[in-house]
Structure formats: structure tokens, C-alpha cells
Image (cartoon, rainbow, N blue to C red; front, side, top):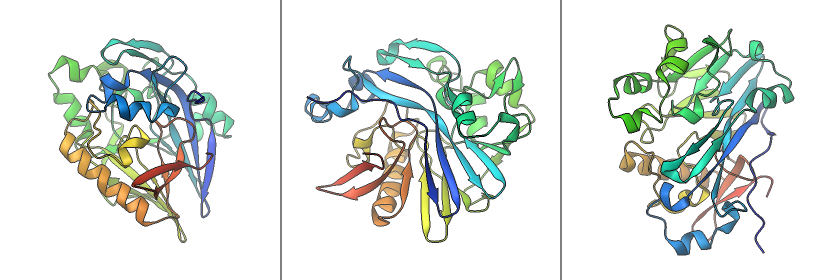
Length: 288
């Protein structure tokens, strides 16, 4: 019998002398058929390890802490302290743990030097502010070039509903958020990697030290199956074709560098893994 999926825990990996820690905020239970409409019943039946005890696809929600030298970078800010039914995908989003996960890693919000958003979907910006004040008061807040402007110009109500809330997120960031571009250095060993498609300004991060390397993927993928099945597309991709090309390029890069680590905040089980060739590309979690 397949053991039900469980959210990824607090977990750290070392990339040379740089440490990356996954910071769980919560999790989401969704209908696989609603979120990935191109997926077949046979596909999902072959991957029951991705489903919870209620038969829903389990996604972890959270962010990452990068510690390089004296610099502390938090990548993405989870869903926030709330539980919200999400009828369009037949499930529920649950958050609230990100700050306790950060403290478990020995870091307080005031210690953080940089907040980096891979993009501005609501499940990546939830701890931006509390009571109108930035949660990370001493940090630079960075996002990919054009990302904030895209969401500010959205007029479709359905699309706007999954983006950064105008009052809760965009207003506190006014005058405090900076744009970054492909290849930009954030700190020693931490570089921006443009990875558009899921959203126009979506960016990943490459972490490297010596001969070791990791890529923090953001929402390049949401489900491990996507790394081997380029046709499995999520409904939240703004530009599905560009997202598929980005996903294939980064998956091929991880596969071509067997020692490289992928870091994916939505996977259950473990946020860290490698892409291996085994009758097609396959994700192997580091704690599997």
C-alpha cells in the first residue's frame, strides 16, 4: 500500500560553504485533474505517492534560507498565516509556519539581509507584511524585472486573484522593492537565473561554491512528473509554451550535472533532490 504524501520538512543542504535551508510555511491539497488538466487518470494512478490520504495532490508551501558568508537571503515568503478553501482547484491552502521555520534555522526576521521573490503569486508573498509593515524590516526586497509591473497592470479578476494583493502586499512594497535581471549577483555564490513562463518576470537562483551547485527553481515545476513529461502543464502558467521550454532547459541542465541539486518548494517529501536518467528524467529526493 502506498504511504500518503507528507509535506516537506525543515531541511538543509550544504553547497560548498553555502547553506540552503527549506522553510515550510504549510501545504495545499488540490485536485490533480483541475490543476493539471492534461494529466491522465493512468498517469496519476502510477504516482499515488504524490497524493494525501484524501486522494488529493499534496503541494508543500514555503521558502528557502540561503546563508552565504554573513549574508542571509530568504527566497519566497509562503502563503501566510491563513487557511483558505480554493474551489477552482477543489482543495485548500494552509499556511502559517514560515517564521517559526526560520527561527528553527536560528534566524530572526530582523537578521535577514535580502528577500528574493521568484515571482509574486499569492503563495509566494504571504509573509511580505504584517499590519501594513514589512515582516523583514532590514531586508532589500527583490523581484524579477517586469514582474511587479505585470501584476499592477492585470485587469482580469480571476488572474488578479492569484497575484499579490494590492493592499496587503503591493502597498507595503511601494518604494521598497527593486528589480533584478538575469545573471545579477545577489551575494557571493548566488546569481539570478531568468526562468520566465509561469509569470513574465519569474526568476530562479543559482547557488554555487567551488565545484558544487544548486538551483532554487521557484515555480518552474510544481510536481516531479513535470521534469520528465513536458506536456504536463499547470493551469497557473501565464505563458504555457514559454514555461515548458524553461522547464525543459533547466531539467536538462540538472540532469546533465549529476552532482547538481534542485531545490523545489512545492514538492512533498523533500524540497531537495536531483534529476536522474532512469527511463526518462526522474526526480530523486535527497531524503528518499
